Image 1 (cartoon, rainbow, N blue to C red):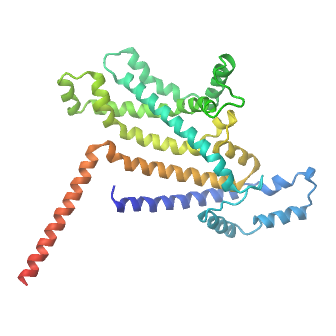
Image 2: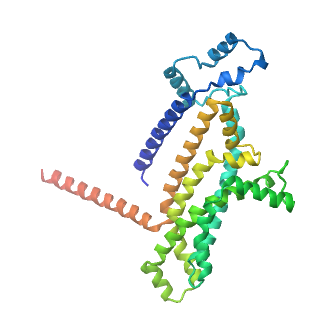
Image 3: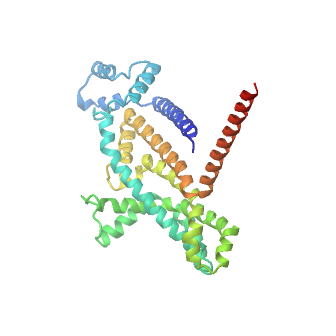
Length: 336
């Protein structure tokens, strides 16, 4: 990927972020509820309507929608996400506390899902397994149909209550990551397996694989040394998409396990109509999605030698064209 292409992608990413922020702001502003009224309108607090209006004025939510939009956008551009209408704490502080937990969970889940996908795809495409291979080919359809909350409840019931292997009440940092990772990796592995099996089937039918097989190489050697590397690109793209969704979408898993993270923060913000927190989480999720997919694009030439060769050929062609142009210019100069 050239510098010009990278700059173009960055420009497109900034445009996508602006559109995402605008749509999220308009949708949240269209909600019939009022975060300030929901937080301070409780009669038990004893606040008068005048005091509530003063709070609205202090928070700037009484201003016209256009003014709120550009004020909020300017704050986001300078790194100030505002304050939570529920707790009053800076949203940036809340994000700094919650984001690392979600990133660790997302990374561990996508890593485990990739390992499961590779192993299942190997067994599903290995020749001579018959019914076993058919079983593994049909496994993704079953895995993707399992609800996340149901998987979480089963894991808690079996590993925590029945076997007592993993604590769900005050677990350690690593121990508290085990069951949420398993919960997220099961439905995530399903599309990865499907894409990888399809890519492996296409790769195995290519002439260079047949040539390696004709030399007497074992099927395992062919898979791990030749087929897998040439089949990873579509799976890597899918993994990037899933990772971007995980950063802002682990709501159910973090809520079931009571785990601090963006998902739990979103659940609390929705319940409390906490618009600044929701806007910040939407922007964080969109940013992570864009960054991950840009990294995936940059990794393509590393995994596929053909892309490196194409880039080298284009560079050589540009150098040849430049040399030819320079020679022609020099010749015209000498003649003149």
